[in-house]
Amino acid sequence: MSISDEFEAIQRKEFIKNKKIAESAFEEGDYDTAKKAFSAAANAAKRISNTVSGKQSKEKWLLLSKNYSYASEQLDKGIIPVKDKPKEYVQQPVHTTYQSSETAPANEKEENFEKYIEDNLITSSTVTWNDIAGLDNTKEIIKESVVLSIIEGKPEAIRPWKGILLFGPPGTGKTLLAAATAGSLKATFFNVKVSQILSKYFGESSKIISALYNSARRRSPSIIFLDEFDSIAMSRSTEISESSRRVLSTLLSELDGLQDKKSSQYVLTMAATNTPWDLDAAVLSRFQKRIYVPLPDLQAVQEMIKINTQRKGIEFQGDLQEIAQDCISKLFAGRDVTTLCNDAIWNMVREQNAGLSQLADKPVDAIKEFKLKVRPLNRADFQKSLETTESAVKERDIIRYETWAQEYGGYEQNKKKQPAISNFKEQSREKNKEELLKPVIDRLPSLLDESDIKPEVFKAALNIAVEIAHDGREGKPVGTAFVIGDSGNVMNNSRQLILNPFAGHRPEERMITISDLKDNIKELAQLDGVFVIHGDGLIEAAGRYLTVDASGVSLPKGFGTRHSSVAAITMVTKAVGVVVSQSGGGIRVIKRGRIEVKV
Image 1 (cartoon, rainbow, N blue to C red):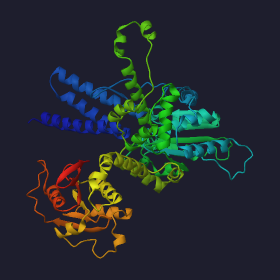
Image 2 (image 1 turned 180 degrees about the vertical axis):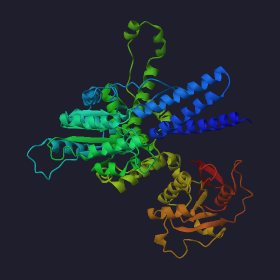
Image 3 (image 1 turned 180 degrees about the horizontal axis):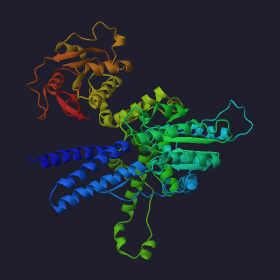
C-alpha cells in the first residue's frame, strides 16, 4: 500500500469516527461535543477529497466537508441546523412561530418572547368545577389557595400555595382541574404544553420560560398550567443534555419566585405529571402542595356517566351503579369512562339508524336533513363497549402511585374521600364472586340435603376457592380441594401426608368462617392433599391424602387424581367436595361421585 493510500485510509477512519460522535451528540442535544466532532469530520472529508481520484468522488467528499463544516459553524452561533436528508445539513435556520433572538434586533428580543407568550399560551376556559365528577377534596384545596391569594388585608403569615403538583394515572382529570380553576375563578390562564416552550435555538427555551413568568406577573392573579411536566423537570441525576439543565435551572428560579416574594402579585403554578418519581428533587421542593389524583370512586364514575349521557341529551335506563362497578373493576380512569360512554352511544345510534354510512354518498344538504333516531341507553349498549375497552392502568401502577404519594405527600388529602385502589378491587372482587357463585347458591338446598353442612360454612369454602383460583400464589396457579361435611368418615378414609398444621389449635381458632384465617388457608393450599372441613366449619386437617379406591369413579376425560379422589370420597360418605383446578382455574362442586356444578 502506498503512502497516499495509507493516508486516505487513516482519514476515512477519522471521518467515520467523528461523524458517529457528531450525529450521536447532536441527537442527544450535546451540541458542544457535536460542534467539535462535525468540524473534525469536515476536515477529514476535505483531506480525503484531495487524495481520491475521480471527479465524482472528489465532489462527494467536498460536499460532505461543506455540510459538516456548515453544521459546526451553525452550532457555534447557537443555531441548530436542519438535518434535511441523511448525512446532509442544509443551510437554513429553523423557523418558529416567533422571531429568534439570534435574528431579532437587541431591543426587540424581550418583546418578541412576551408577544409569543401572549399570542399562544393565554387561553380562556369554559370548564367549571361542576364539570368534574368527584375529587371534592382536591377541588377544595385549589379553591382555597386561589381565594386566599385574592383576599386583601390578610396577615403576612397567611400565604397561599404558589405551586401545586397534580400527579396520578393518565386520564384522571389533572388537566380538567387546571381548566376549571381558570374557568370558575376568572384568573389569567396560561395553558402551557412542553412543545410550546422548547426551542431549537440555544438559550431560547430559558428566555421563553422567563417571559412566561414575567407576563404572568403583569397579569396577576395568574395561573400557569404546565402539562407533561416531567418532560422539562426530569431529575438532574439522570443523563440529560446541557441545554436541558439550563432550562431546568431557569424554571427553578421562577418557581422559587425571587422576583415577587415581597409583592402582592400572585402567580399559581400548577403542574401535571404521570411519572412523579422522575421529577428533580429541587423541583419537588418548590411545589409545597402535592396532590394525588386517583382513579374515580363509585360515586364519581356514576356522575361521569351522567355528565356524558344525560346532561348531553341521551337518557339511560337501567342500573347505573352496576355499570360504574364494572368500570372500577377494569381500573377505568375518567378518560376511559368518557370513551366508554361515547362508544355505548354509537352502539345505540348504529342500531337505531341502519345504513347510516350510506348517507356519505349523498349531498351535504340531504345529510343535514336526516332525522337521527335515538333511544335511551341500556345495559346492553355498555356491555358491548366494556368488552372492547381496556384501561392503560394496571394494579401495579396504582400501587406505585400510592407508595410515592405516601412517601412524598399527596395521599392523605384524598384518602378519606377517594378510597384506595385496594378497596376498589375488593368491591369488584366481591361483586364478581356473587356472579360466579350464583349457580351454586341457587342450588344450595339440593347440594346440602342429607348432609350436616351449614350453608354459611359451604359459602365460606366457596369464597376461598374462588380467591385461590383467581389469585394463585405469587402469580402461579394453585390447585386444591375442600371436602366438607361427614368429617369423621372422611378422616377414617384418609391419612396425613404432613404434620397437620391445625392440630393442637383450639376449635374457635380453626373455623373456616373466620376471616382472619383466610390467608393462612390460601397459603396452605399449595400443599398436596385436601382440606377436611366439619359441617359446622371446623377445619379438621390440611394436607390430607384420600385413601379411598377411585376405580369406580366415572368423570369426563381430562380430570386428574385430585378430582377422582374427591369424587370417590363423596361416593362412600355424605361429604361434598369443592375442587380448584390448577390447570384451568375452574371450580367444580362434586357430590355422590358426580360433578354437580361448574364455576
